[in-house]
Length: 431
Image (cartoon, rainbow, N blue to C red; front, side):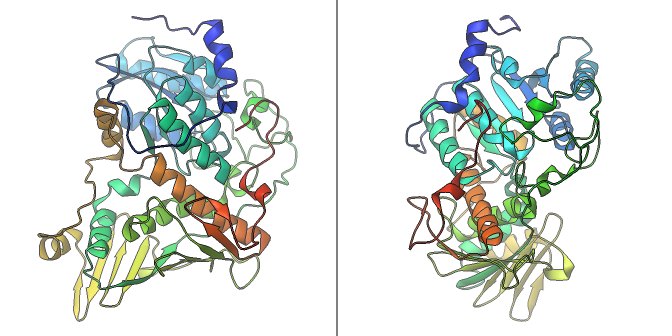
């Protein structure tokens, strides 16, 4: 077994990982296979989602070798959980993700940090030769999304975005019905999400020992500690960092990253995006943003869908399909079907278009690590969905209609501002 500790040279190389130039991506991945028969995994970030992913992956045919969190209580708790599962004390615990990435026996990393760290850690992991499972939204801004796509291609890695709705049958079958024309010509889509982030104005609280607050902030501006951003210890629930533009993307990048992803899937627009983004008619409203795509389909973010639920509602000239995580409804004429399996049996037996069918999101990632194929929510899907979410936020924050070229990934027709594509990065944390 290789040493658990990175060399100082490896560590220093990783420190600048996020600042390196990248080349244009391609969909073809390397055919190489992981060096170890038992995949070595590291997990970075231990809020509620990090613990959830740890519980999911620890049941698979992998070995969690290391955990990382800026809070000592959280990382010690995660280490104890892993050690308890394996019946040993072998799991390492790190405060700095660069030390974890320096380990040569780690083949893949799971990233469950707040959004403002996603791209920086992902890029460093790719450069270090690791495959990546990163929570959604894949990036904090548009520039980062473009760079992640380039880096995956350059380093020939496998990436899975945590948009796990693509691994749920309600959404997959719903999208297959749309793509195969069962509801006629698709005209528009309603998605249940909304809300842009705002500048952070939280008051200062006294930090307790054991939290590296400066490292938690990372590329974000310096500000005093507040427990609403990062509760201490092995907490449950979801902290409020997502509400603030310095760290997250509000509701538009939370459930927007889920439901816009499904909208893209059902439109066949995984490698594209909107050409126009209009803000809500009432400035400051959390809902009502309208996205228009080159195929003429429009997508609205609305407060309520079928049965006051979320999800995605596809409306066509001959019917409609609504899909949520545990609900489904297909309507055409006088017929209503509330089981996705019944709808599939009746209308998709001889379908020409079949989407990727996965047993689970984690299993799809691990299978693609082995065969070097493209995951169901790769960097391509993850980045283009993130870009759409960021465009919604920009339209809302600046109360401006934006024209966008999804192929060249730039503002057009005199709209937008290049400065909106990125952020001001603190210190060496640059992308």
